[in-house]
Structure formats: C-alpha cells, structure tokens
Image 1 (cartoon, rainbow, N blue to C red):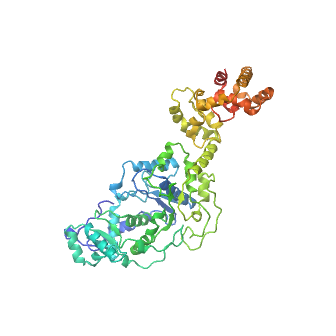
Image 2: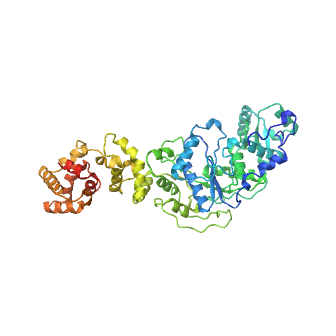
Image 3: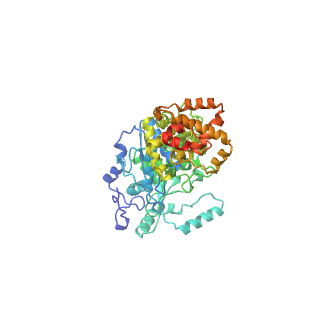
Amino acid sequence: MRGKYEDNADKGGPVWGRGLSFPTPSAFLEISCSSRHLSDPQMVLLRFAPSPTGPLHLGGLRMALYNHLFARKHAGKWLLRIEDTDASRSVPGSLEGIRNALEWAGLRYDFGPGREGPHGPYFQSERLDLYKSYAGKLLDSGNAYRCFCSQDTLAEIKGKLARSGSSASYDRRCLHLTEEEVARKVRAGEKHVVRFNNTAAPTRPSATDLIFGRPRDTHASLATDPIILKTDQFPTYHLASVADDHEMGITHVLRGEEWLPSLPLHLDLYASLKIPAPHFGHMPILLNPDGSKMSKRHGDVQVVDFIKRGWEPEGVLNWLVLSGWGVSHEAPAPDGSSQARSPSIVPDSTRIMTMDEMVDQFDLSAITHRNTVLEAAKLEYINKHHVMRRASTRTGLEELAQKVHEHIKEAFPNSPHTTLDMIKKAISILEGRLTNIYDIPFHAPYLFQEPDLTSTVAKAMREKIASENYDLVIKTVKATLEGQSEDWDDIDFLTLLHKEREGLDLSTKAFMTPLRYALTGMKDGPAIADVMDALGRERTLARLR
C-alpha cells in the first residue's frame, strides 16, 4: 500500500478535501474493497494490537488471552496487529519479545507477522496510505479540517480559553479557513495536522459496551476536535484503529478500559465515514499491589520475567483469566443485540482451569466493572496445582524435568546427580510442595548434593536429638537396610520403617527426626520413605554410615 498516493496540491494537481490529493476512483475502490471482503463476513474476528514499545507485560498478555478465548468460544479467529506508527517510542526487539511471549503462553494468533493472511499488512507503518485516504474522505465530507496552528499558538489559545472559564482546548480557528486558503498553505509547505470536526459528526445511537452496557457519554472530556493525522502524516490511534478495524473486518474489539472514554469519538468516526462499527468490550485494567496502574514502567510485570522464573504458562493464564472474573451481570449479547445474556455460573478466583475449560467457561458477563489487583499468592496456589496436574502423567513429568534440567545443573554445577531421572524423582516426591518447578533446589538440595549438616537448621536439629537415641535409630535402620536382599525399587520403605519404629518403641517424631537429619539436614520435607527411595541404596547407606 505504501506509495500508492501522493499529495498533488504542490504540483497543480486536484485537491481533495481542502488540500489532500484525491486518488483515482479505481484506487479508492481497491482500498474500500480490501481484505475485509476476502473472508466470511459472519465469522467472529478479533485483534490484539500492541505497540512495540518494550516487552509484553501481564496486562497485554491478559488482553491477548481474552481475545483468544472469545474467538475460540465463538468459533472465530484473531489476529496480531503491530501499532508502530510512533517510531520515537519503538524499542528494538519488541516484536520478537511479544511473539515469543504469546508462543510461550500457547496463544497462537491466526493471522499476523509470520502468519500471513488476507488481512495484511499487519504493521501500521505499512498502511500509511490507507490512513491518508480515510483522512481525505473525512476532509472531503467536512467531517475533518486541516489545522496550521503552531505549538506556541495552540498553547496561547488553550491558555486564553482556560482563563475565560471554557473547558475547550481549541477555538477551531482553522475550521473557518476557505478552501483557497487551505490549498495555498498546503502548496507553501506549511506544517499542519488534520482535526476531526466534532460539530459535524452525524447523529448515531448511544454507545453500547459488551462489559459496561451503556457507559456515560464522555464527549465533554475529549479534546476539542481531536487530531487524527499528525504533521508527519502519521495517524493518531483514533483514526488508525478505526481504519484498520474496518479494513481488516474486525467484528469485536476487546481492549483496555483506558480507551472507554474515547469510544464516543471512535463511534463518531465510524458514523462520519458511513461504515459499520464493530462491537466493543472494554476490560477493567490490572493494578499493581500498591494500587497503581500496571504498566511496562513497573518491575515484575513483564511476561519474560515469569518465563525466566519457571512459572507454568497455563498457571499464569489461569491466574490472569480469573483476575477480575466476578459475578455475572446483565450485558449486551456477543452479537451486540440489546437482549442480555442470562446469568452464568462463574468460577471462583482460584479455580484450576485448563485452556479448554477457560474457552468453554469464558463469559464477558462475568467480567467485573472494577479494576483488579493481581495477587501473587493466588498465582502460587494455581501454579502449584498445574505442576501437580502435569506431573501426574508420564509425558507431563518428562516435560517438567526437561524444562528445569538446565536450572538444576546451574544450581549444582559439580553434582553428578543432576540427571533427568533424579529430577523426575524430585518432582514426584515433592508433589504438593512445589509452587514453582524452579523451587526444587530450595526444597530438595540433598537429592543432588550431600546434606549440609553444618547449617544453622541442621545444628539445631541435632542438638534436640539425644545422642543415645540418635545412635540407636541410625544403627538399627542401617543394619536393616543392609540386610535387604531385594531390589531397592521393590522395598516397601514405609512398612519397613513402621516396623522398626514399633520395635524400638519410639514416637514417630523421635524415630524420624534422626533419619531426616542424617539424610537431608533439613527440618521439613517429603516422607523419609520417599527420600530413601529417591536417593537409592548407595547414597542412603553412605549417609547413614
């Protein structure tokens, strides 16, 4: 699309909309009949449209997840669109980071960079001629005008309006320029922007939102005649999103609540362009624990950090999908009709859900209207159960061991025991204790290296054990294990230890503490029978000796 149109005003060519060149009828038809008509117009199609301004954060991942769930719920598709029209804010490597984060989470978009389809190009920087043509159409209909005021002039105007008690941000002086004056200024190369003419917007139905129902009208809080095309001929979000969503055939837009005040303006743009608007749903934003808005500027919210820390993708998604998922309320149906959906049963904020279950139970009517604080404790609880679920199958256990293998080797670089087999044993005996698979070195270092009996915890344990009792327990169990002729894997350690404890007439604590000290050097941990089984004959007997 780039380079399709040129501004002919300074070449004596035709002037479209007070100074914007008019593309040929066939060229404009090519834009109007773009990719939105290449797919089934009834198919639900959503878009996730991040800016490449840094790593994807949790709020962005949650928005991608909601688009994914809604699309799959309604047998539709979703695409990834990169909103890169502000080159000054773009950060190198951001696109790769966004795609890697989505891939890690298992959120596979149907169309977008690397997955070309009928809706491209998928970078807004490659669609500039489209925005220019849309701005030209608004100029031609009188729904937009060129503004040549400098920044100094605009500041002066705003100050005067404020001192007079007006809430306006611009006095619309350029709206009253004649077509001849506009054309002359354009030919002279004067810098200008294109503003949307609020006063010319056609009458339209009240705004309806899939989450908030009928939000209050926010026209009064919007800028006076907002800029839709900047001096560099790059669009603002308002024009670009409207043009792209229409041309790409987007049927539903799920985006952050911060855009809800702009909804009336966007609907005005749709009405002025005489094109149908998609259905909108605005998601309440996520907050940091201190109540501030979650953003890339805060630490500990980047998806890459959660990847590096070993959190389970489904655990993180499960946590995010339930953040702000409260009681059901009446809201417009997914097709935008006024008939509200019936209340549904909504999962609690820590319910363990697979991706298929998330898709099946996802319901916009269950999204709360309030902003939500992400609670780390809930992630730990949810993630622990996802680890347990994966570890319950042979394939899942193997995958978990592979995932954490390098991490274990880095934690114990001189250990000969950091094998996949030992890691699988560690995961199995730590079941229910692991909130994160990367916590294995913290919970069971003794499986990979000799226990540290000089630690403060180990010394405290030993001081509480009477020497005669310690010697008796260790000597008895060692002799019994040395006398076992069957394979180590076949020994019923739980029954064996129970018999030895009864034979010595000791309480469970008095019997097990010496063994736990000798084998692990840690106060807490899995059952000693499981530890023995995991360590194997040689390592267990060596520690008892």
